[in-house]
Amino acid sequence: MEVKERLAQILEALLLAADQPLSLDVLFRLFQAEGGVTKKDVKAALELLGSRLEGRAVELREVASGYRLQVRPEYAGWVGKLWQERPPRFSRALLETLALVCYRQPITRGEIEEIRGVSLSPNIVKTLIERGWVREVGVKEVPGRPALLGTTAQFLDDFNLKSLDELPTLPEIKDPAQLEAALARLGAHAPLEVPPAEAKPDEADEQPATVH
Image 1 (cartoon, helix red, strand yellow):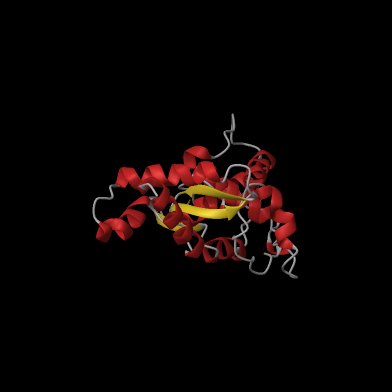
Image 2 (image 1 turned 90 degrees about the vertical axis):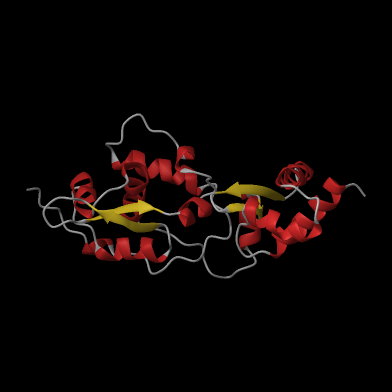
């Protein structure tokens, strides 16, 4: 058996067993003890594995944190039948907030409220942070030094993205409905491994924002 063939089989086993994406560097380090295996060999073996999975229900996917094997999106409905709990549903307010963070980051809560026209429920940001999709990336140097929010590597992984450059493009970021539609297009390709949602944020908590 040639080296690339053997490496592809080992990589398949490693990625099946892993509970998170594995980067090229991590995979290469696992082969270093063997000697003679280069990072280029590992990359070539990954490409071979990916081509072999064409037309299969499982695909090799590269996301921000590395490579993983996952069920193709078109089979998500079938695989979902294995679990009794209903898939997570997010409020419009949460989706709009996440979309604004994606396209306007770094962004403050006040700026989100100004664009959406309502006060932002603390539960929404709390849920996004707990899911690992949003984090505080710094502070804005204005009075009060409000926290700046940005997306995380976990967000990229969960939405099958290698980088923010793969976000759907929008001509102008003005209408929250456009932002939500863009995020919905991403969500249609999200992997099955996305963890269950926390309690749905209560949109009744939101009040019209006061514009100063």
